[in-house]
Image (cartoon, rainbow, N blue to C red; front, side, top):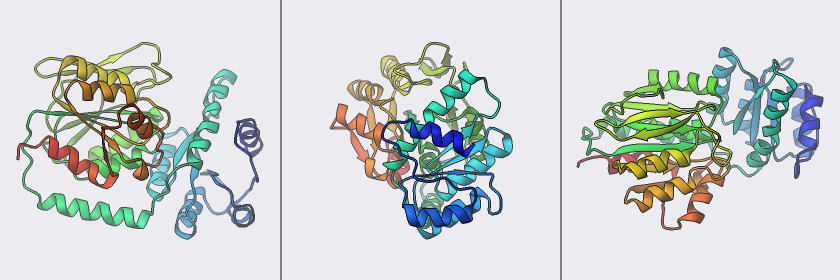
Length: 335
């Protein structure tokens, strides 16, 4: 497996593999000597596990880490733990795939590693303290009174971390919320279950025909279908089977564009991620008179998508991650 991934990465433009280690002890020595920009770390290793070694790395000298894990229920739980500890991304090991599926899946790894090299590794201790402070502040805040605006988020690489921060203080009667999330479907399902258990509001997998109701967050992560919003009383979610839009499915551009065309009062916020998906759609939303926000690239784990939105519309509001949730809720609050 090490030889396979090393070969794949060596064939990626602008990526050079400087070392391969069989264990945490071996890796610890190589990291000190080779000083890599990015580490790929297998969850399953002899001796110290990948998760324990990830925690050690983040405690001692934080580096961008891409975790390699299996696509199983246990694997997705482990992936969420890796995100909590500070991993930039969790990449599924395609152990049971056709050669074509395997080539397609691992072809993404080089792009992920390049994005990880330019990522912002956050101080997890400070982040946890801010999340706890935000939760305490939310508990003492006046009761939320919805003003009729809906919310649409989009995110890809780094999105699980960003959404965990933003939604931590989402009120129980939150504005109807739709999220376009680019991540592995099984990981998304586990993430949704975790959020639904932890948050005061309801969190669901986006379903075709589901009405957008107050107190519910819908997360769309199906790589086979796009998500759009259909006007009505109330508006409804529609899932569409069609080709990717500029390489993305589900497409944030389609989500934002559908809200803009329908004239549904909404707030759109584009979060951390690779590529430029969402930039055009967010501008359409802004041009239709809606409030639009972009995660400040300096606070984004991966700044490519926010930077693309800012380049297309320099007037878009840039908000640090720690303030985004409060800002969006403020725009949807009557008071």
